[in-house]
Image (cartoon, rainbow, N blue to C red; front, side, top):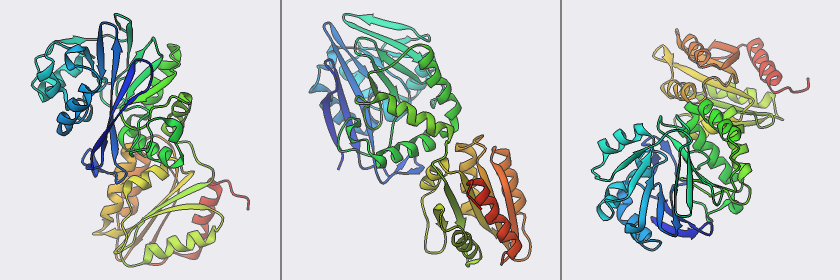
Length: 399
């Protein structure tokens, strides 16, 4: 059941959090049975208030209901739009009906997006990078962070309380029991990595550049307040460090990920033999078979921190199996340029172009293909030994 939370996170800032348990596929694509939150914030000053981001449009009535418990909408002088995507701006139209006088603040490209999507008459203030807005006892600095993950994205720094409102950056899937990082356990961190890889993965270089930009500008927030997930007030450096690690695709120990499709057992048999040959390896295995279909999102998340990836496909109508073709396409989009060591396996019956197609796709995306084996139904023993040796070497295992 959808619900919301209202919580003061500082002396003058209040969180409005919508817990969305209805959404099953974020962006109509990523399976998130864990759900997601939409976080908006109200900053109260002596002579008015500022609204930072909003909620999804279908929850507009709930948004206004929650907002009125914190501040009279007419007291809001500015609406800051860090990111124009509709999960953060959907309630703008409804808000405009109760306060047409508030000024919408964002970078210029956001205005055309917002006016194309919504009917609102509010005045729009276009920003420049590092521009500040001061009124009463509130000073906001706007840092342009393009392509994290749309071209208009920015972050807002509330100077008086050193709170950085980051929208999608440093966000997460899931609906945590608490509102701050006191409940940020390993499971939550995994949902955060899943969020980064699926939503921002294509723009990880931009994310790293903008993290560096924050460092260069000397912004050291006391609180990191994203628009999805937990607020980092206990240890704000932690989420920045984690996001940096994940964006770089740094490996978690000696983890290996195997993703395979198997229609009639040939590939599944080879996968089992590889795992049996390396009993001490932490294999994370994801399968597409006649009785099993793992989430691509989970495979993508685990692969992001893997030291080596194995992708195994049977031939399907001369090409790769459709599930593997889709997975390689997503890996190429979300993990491009990480130079992950990769092993490719292909089985066939009469002929195949799957091996060549998979090899080209992975190399074009910047994966480091360290071995490849193509075989007719059963892998040759010398090929199996070589593949096992390649995986072992990539994991830096002792002989």
